[in-house]
Length: 364
Image (cartoon, rainbow, N blue to C red; front, side, top):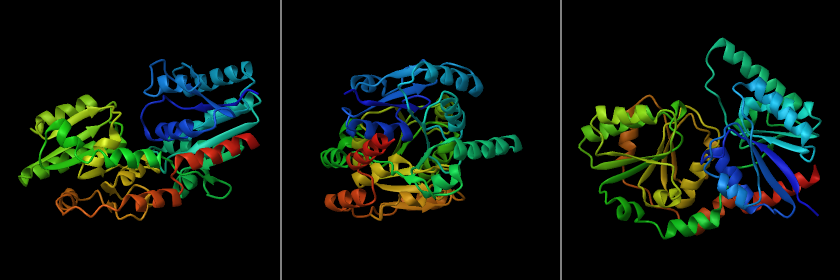
């Protein structure tokens, strides 16, 4: 019997939070029963595309330059491919368009998945769109999933009748790799002093400007350090120019997209996340799995703290406070069994979550 195929709607399968979470589930799901295919809105290859094809999935690009045209093309595709009776959308407010397309095509099971707690919408027009999209998501989705309570309340207005599915990681693999990689940065980059990493797309939300201010203050205090910025995005060229202008080239390294993030985390002193907002960032689950201390904006959901003493939340009002924290003596890392137990207890084990998701899809 052929597996039931689920159509996931994403922008592009790059190494970002929601996409990484999806891949963690995909690798562990019983693919003899459930198979994933992915609608993307670009013809450029995503970071995970080759692996998806290797696992038996399909990448389906739908190319259009505005949400209405995308909706109509997606509806047409679904009418022509009636084998998809589960559409699982992951693009926050834009889920409204994708679920309307699925409903118009007669798809019975329409899942809206919230991965964030805010969308930085400021103007009156954008607020109206946010309100419309939230209402539409609630009405058109036949099933609702969120990465945490705040993400549920943001997109659906309530956590009632929303399945809270934690952003899972491969706990066993991360712990094994981390244990072997405590000197990875020193060996690979030959850098001395404080080692700080920031992981995330190079866009406004991740607030890299604040990170550069931290770097400036560390340099002013004559601290030996290196900040490793991991990721790509629209602000890359601008940030690199700022680094040159601030004479921080010797202290900041842009590492781009990486496949060795676990190794980098395991050997860093701190991770920083001065984001303007976040839902439930997978990268913070991964960092705690490696035993890495993280300093995080208080605009990030506190639900991500697993109680291991590895996450501190700070206001973005003062760079000095962040620098003071970075210069504190590092905390004692929890033992591996403590880490493993905490992640599994809080629902972050990908293998367990994949089993639950398989049963949910099979019940639809």
